[in-house]
Amino acid sequence: MTKPILFWFDFASTYSYLSAMRIEAEARRRGADVLWKPFLLGPIFAAQGWTSSPFKIYPAKGAYMWRDMERRAALYGLEFHRPLADDPRNFPQHSVFAARIALVGLQEGWGQDFCKRVFLAEFGGAQDISDPQILAALAADAGAGPDVTVRAVSGEIKALLRTQSQDAMDKGLIGAPSFTVGDELFWGDDRLEDALDWAVQS
Amino acid sequence: MTKPILFWFDFASTYSYLSAMRIEAEARRRGADVLWKPFLLGPIFAAQGWTSSPFKIYPAKGAYMWRDMERRAALYGLEFHRPLADDPRNFPQHSVFAARIALVGLQEGWGQDFCKRVFLAEFGGAQDISDPQILAALAADAGAGPDVTVRAVSGEIKALLRTQSQDAMDKGLIGAPSFTVGDELFWGDDRLEDALDWAVQS
Image 1 (cartoon, chains in turn yellow, blue):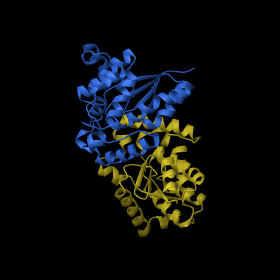
Image 2 (cartoon, one colour; image 1 turned 30 degrees about the vertical axis):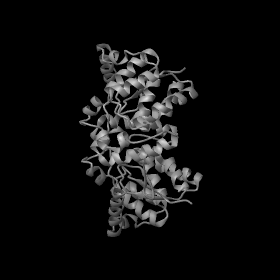
Image 3 (cartoon, rainbow over the protein chains, first blue to last red; image 1 turned 135 degrees about the horizontal axis):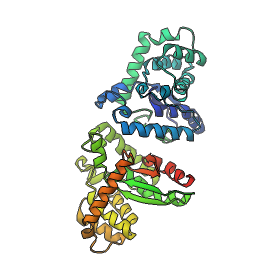
Image 4 (cartoon, rainbow over the protein chains, first blue to last red; image 1 turned 30 degrees about the horizontal axis):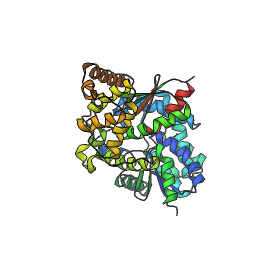
């Protein structure tokens, strides 16, 4: 028996980049079914009393994270550059529009490709993924139709992102990336393999 | 060339238990030299503005950590019971006396054995590792002489623990377990293998 695994990520999250680039191959190897779930970390951080990423609030944690990301990206053979030429004002990036486009894409079949392109542009290429023109180009490359940026701001998609972010909080998520298999929660790119193993053994 | 790797841990730290039980075999497999470095997390947490473990301050993180520890201990074949029969008042435990005895033991050659016994008693057996009688028995089992609890409160050992805790902060540690190879810092049991690989490739 194999249960589906939900992959929860925020485009602003550095470690979500690693998982987004790794999960398809690791899932294929195990025969696991993955559902991609973009959501917004903001409300979850706010519930902890944080007004920004803990990597900003706690500079020692942030300094460690950037070095750790460099090492881990190298281990996985992934490009990695700090966003926008190391300008610390530009982390975390605003991810809401990217998440809304991703939801359109996940309904239409080009969503996973788009998500990987966004993460690569942001953390591999230090591009501004809150820029609508950059997002529109990435969506087109992934196969989106010309009306995607209009559809992405429809009431239906906005409501879907709110619902998905609330679902994340209800499931006890404390950060991104996270993975859920039924009620079982795994947090962090370091738990990707454990979560997939759990899904196929459930 | 192989550089020594420093293994930084606090006896109050759940994930330090996992690393303490795993590091000898993983180091042997790679031919790495490990120096065990007990220290106190308290001053590092205080520098972040925390008056206790983040697992206490942020209950959602704490809830996740206990479940994650259960799963990880099972993966590694380690006993795991929450301290003192799940009484949440008893985490984190006071680790200063255990750390001082460990420093004596590390000077005398029975330190690593003692450290593993303390972690096993605490997280495998839910015992109170701030209890001097329990600690004295664990030290005797590891090969300590009868004067160990006197030596452990000497000015020399107290100063050594303070120095070691300050060294941890100076190296940028933000939690435990951590591993350092020269200036390279790795945080968390999840980075044990990476840190050992780094040491033997440096």
